[in-house]
Length: 315
Image 1 (cartoon, rainbow, N blue to C red):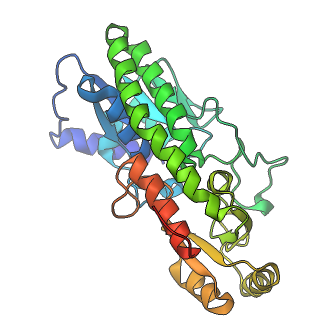
Image 2 (image 1 turned 180 degrees about the horizontal axis):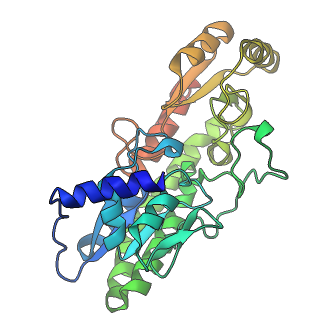
């Protein structure tokens, strides 16, 4: 993988490609996912040039790497990332090839190491930490479930980490980042409170998800996720598993199927037909679905999909 990235970067440079000129005095920031791009732009405002890597509709475990990513990371003053090894399929290799002393590959965590690294998983109450690691259990994350961005309540924590990181790298404008943070939180936190009020209608509602990535969403909404459509994380369902899942859903009164947009729609439709359950299609990062390009819109859209599929009133 590393050699492939290097060859692509070399071809790009030989072809005469050059990045857009950095505006004078602005921090160059690369954020791994659209959620973090949005929040960082809100905090950095006109003091930072923020570029992303993964696109919203992509499976974060299978991000298509582009030669331009290497150049972005090579010139970055800061790299903002989710952490907990969720970017393991693309970020470590890109950082190694980019050779930026401010943001190097961290071989221990599959993340970033250096003064320019802003790890947005710091301080999160990590869920689903595996007691043991075995390939027989599917694709497990060794540090625990990394999809905390599905819980809107994690937004303020991420924003504070980003603001602190930008202020550390650009202390001259620390007061500006703090002011931007306060303005952002003054908008975000009341909306989170309203979403939490609406989510109360889902408390105790039983559901299955396609992939084992919704624990934080369950924590926010009170939904009880009892199983997954996948046999195990990253392992496609077998006919036997699906038949057993139908029996389980009927036996436990499961009336909601949560399908992350990048996964198979047909098998979920089959399950819905067999069980009478509603289907909620959600994104696992911002801009995965229409009208979800910001962290706020992404969070609200997911909640609305859950409420509508469960027959409740949406935002």
